[in-house]
Length: 493
Image: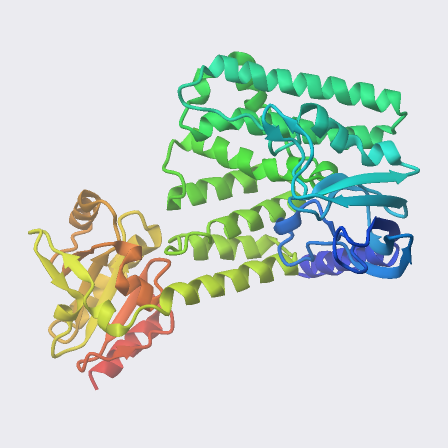
């Protein structure tokens, strides 16, 4: 515990000193007074992660230093607090990708236009809205990604290959490999011609590499097996690596590809259904197993956030994985982001349901006859045990539940309510555990009105009603806890 507290304090101090000593990058934006119809127009600088900052600002801190009007032009001078070199974006449209250099100065000339001027193969090669020209002492460094985009298409955007299931897989992979090779060759020549330091080349190489891996992943997303890939490209995917913190936290394509790659490989190994509960668990475990701490924490935050995206579903394992995540992730911003996102999600789902909806949730019995939850509430107390055949904690509670059932025979009704998707799995497990009598399958399981109303997102879950049909608080206790019996005793007083 002391070590965790020390680590949190240490990294907090590191972040503090990084901000204190972060250098200010100065940019002068020059534009026609009538072209943008704005005074003091400037562009913010997006961080490499952009919308994946998770609680942090998406943009670097900025401040307008001066605004000058002269000869029909306006010049806005801005300063940005930049802690380290990165592949960031001038925030224009989808973003003008360039290197963001701490302590540097640049001049950006803006000619507003509705679309980029240049097309390649019928597509706009540069995904930004203004026509930008950047000058400064690192002029060719700034223009590296722009130059590459004009020649071979912007990385991760319009130049990305499109795979159709009817396409020849070998030809597609060969084209992806060719694009990768010519981009690397172009980068190598560009760096030599303009005498650009290796640090910039290294970051650019990682972005080109990520774009190549992203292209190779597209057939997988269409259901093509990795076994069908040509050996060279299959090995490229099997040996892909995005576990370098220096690259991960200074890039956009490399870091974003880390998640899409890990998800695709997880699904290829498990052969499970995408965006299922099992898929959620498999990807989580692979990230946890594969990546170093700082990357792991960021990727898991992205993963949890991604699986909160389904507007109608909270995954059954979400609570347990969230608790696991919190046990080792000490980034307060990440954890607060997930907590607040989760709270919003639960509110969106659960506020739509009422007790009447819950009580009408249909149940299935062995005879395939359907009844409603309200039919279980009679003139004596009822304990509804929400469980599933795949839930180990549920199965561990069965002996304690049976013991209480024998003790309160004819005083309290014990009802087993399965959240299984598969009817046969419910029947087989109930039979093996000797669960007979009041034994039902809840139709629509976690998607049912009952689950939504009572916010049932993990199992086991217990609903205890008194003889008047009023819910009794069990305080999260389970039958194996001696205090659970005390609650049952009060119902019979």
